[in-house]
Image (cartoon, rainbow, N blue to C red; front, side, top):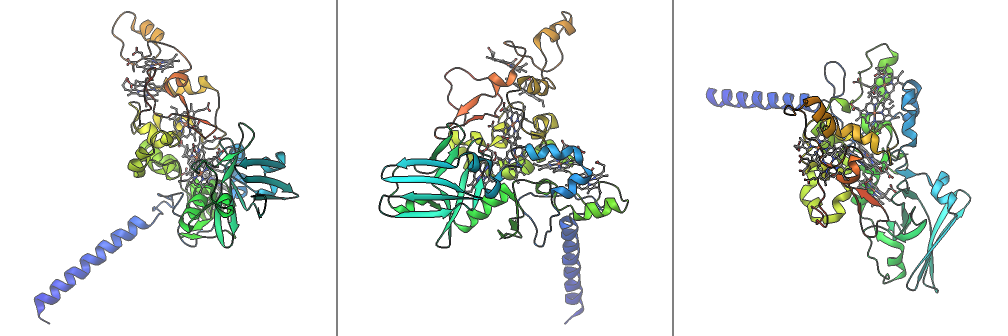
Amino acid sequence: MNQTFKQHTLAVVALVLTLLAAALVMLDPLSASGQVRRWNPRRVPPDTVFVGDQACLDCHKKFASFNHSGMAMAMEQVGESKILTENPQLTMRVGAYSYQIKRDGKQSFYSVTDGKDTITLPILYALGQGKMGQTYVLQHEGKFYESLVSFYAEPKGLDFTIGAPRMEPRSLLDAVGRVLPPNEVSNCFSCHALGAVVGSQLRLDKFTHGIRCESCHGPGGKHVEAVKAGEPGSTGIFDPGLLSGDELTQQFCASCHRGADEFALLKSMEINNVRFQPYRIFHSKCYSDDRKISCTACHNPHEPLRENAPAYYDKRCLECHTLKSQTAKAAGGAGATAGSSCPVAEKDCTSCHMPKIEVKAAHFNFTDHYIRIVRPGEKFPN
Ligand code: HEC
Ligand code: HEC
Ligand code: HEC
Ligand code: HEC
Ligand code: HEC
Ligand code: HEC
Ligand code: HEC
């Protein structure tokens, strides 16, 4: 081997090592101060261990309100399910097929019959708090199924699951529901539960129902130890408060609520994309990297959703906009300087500018997060 070639090889090796080191630094989620810099709620690294909400609530008592939030209830435990105990017998008929969901002690059974044969399966998982709907995951002959019918709060009872073909099934097996391919099972559980998918492995023997503290803050074991050992409270935990407004909205909350990564797909869904708030709000003239228009400007993820509380949301709008009467007063006749104001009304802003949109078959009117002037008779802006 000649000298120049050796030198060249050494240089290449050195370059590769430098790049590797740089990559490792970027991958290392811990900064020098021990603060966690990155966390993706749906990409849980292998061997991650979660300590559970109770550990967090021992010190962070004021966050106990989280237990009453929709996210905490994104998956109900069948044994304690409020919906399944309050509705001990649910029935529905689709052509020749009759459905029944029946409570028996701590279990619920989903059965469908064509009059001759019957398939009865225990409900394994109940997804959704049931405000929009609750869908069941079943297992039959080694495969997972999404129930063909779901529970809806309004009207209280069963109807087709959103997205399911609304027609008579072709066979008793079809009538059970849709076979869920393994990747879809993982997707369901990674958005509705904690620790069911770790290092891309599905582990249904060991997970926690619903969104939990560590879904958003990452594993808390190191933090608990560090704080107990007298280290600063920022150690070993991810604080999404460090993200910019756009990162928080289009990456962090969007990891489950869907956003920038999937715009082409969401656009093709037309009116059904009204469910995906990060996608919708992105199109609004109000939207920017400003934290005053990020998801947490209007929603405290540690509390239940504020419903039918227009005054609460008015305050958020008025962080940027002004009231016409006040602008006129403040300006005292001179030119107004603050943000634009509404020529039509002074309160209940969201009632006109964030309309509730009815999605056929969903039994729920979704709040359109594309904040805008809604003109009478306009087509849904996709
Ligand atoms: C032994 C007490 C203790 C426990 C247990 C604990 N924390 Fe903390 N945590 C603290 C203290 C003290 C701080 C710093 C002051 C503050 O923000 O309240 C803190 C800060 C935080 C912060 C803000 C970090 C920052 O960068 O400012 C987050 C997020 C957090 N904790 C989440 C959690 C989660 C999630 C759990 C459960 C896995 C948990 N904590 C368990 C004591 C605790
Ligand atoms: C790990 C996935 C996940 C992440 C991350 C996530 N969400 Fe959610 N969120 C859900 C699921 C699932 C539901 C539906 C719960 C239900 O209705 O059953 C939901 C529901 C909600 C609701 C409605 C609650 C109700 O009672 O109707 C709000 C508001 C919300 N999320 C805000 C946020 C915000 C803000 C963030 C980011 C800080 C966020 N979410 C991050 C999964 C997530
Ligand atoms: C990418 C994350 C994601 C995946 C994958 C996902 N969900 Fe959801 N799901 C959500 C979020 C976020 C909401 C609430 C927000 C909304 O729709 O407005 C929700 C809402 C629901 C609801 C209505 C909850 C209510 O408030 O009543 C049901 C039922 C549901 N999902 C079932 C499922 C099932 C079953 C699967 C798998 C086949 C699944 N989801 C896959 C994120 C997800
Ligand atoms: C859906 C995601 C989500 C869940 C679930 C969640 N948090 Fe948070 N948390 C956030 C976000 C986002 C922030 C930053 C808030 C901000 O800056 O606007 C935050 C901030 C915090 C902070 C630091 C700021 C403060 O107000 O003291 C603590 C402590 C904390 N969370 C504890 C918890 C605990 C304990 C739980 C479970 C009971 C929990 N969080 C569940 C998203 C979440
Ligand atoms: C400017 C205020 C505002 C911002 C920013 C905002 N929301 Fe909302 N959101 C609302 C209002 C208002 C409602 C309806 C409350 C009610 O039911 O009365 C709502 C409802 C929801 C619901 C319940 C389902 C529905 O369609 O009603 C979810 C889920 C949700 N928001 C998630 C998000 C997420 C995720 C983000 C970030 C992309 C976000 N929101 C940003 C104001 C806001
Ligand atoms: C972070 C600042 C911010 C917040 C918060 C905010 N907006 Fe805006 N909004 C803007 C900006 C910037 C524009 C575009 C310039 C203008 O009209 O002032 C705008 C434009 C609008 C428009 C005109 C849209 C069009 O298509 O012409 C309406 C209507 C509006 N906002 C309503 C609201 C309502 C209602 C809320 C609360 C739910 C809100 N905004 C919250 C910054 C904001
Ligand atoms: C009763 C329905 C209604 C309510 C409530 C309402 N608006 Fe409007 N808003 C409208 C309509 C309609 C327009 C369009 C007026 C026009 O261009 O003729 C408008 C226009 C606007 C604009 C654009 C102004 C411009 O100069 O282009 C903003 C910003 C706005 N509204 C903000 C708000 C805020 C903030 C609130 C709450 C304080 C609010 N609106 C309450 C119906 C409403």
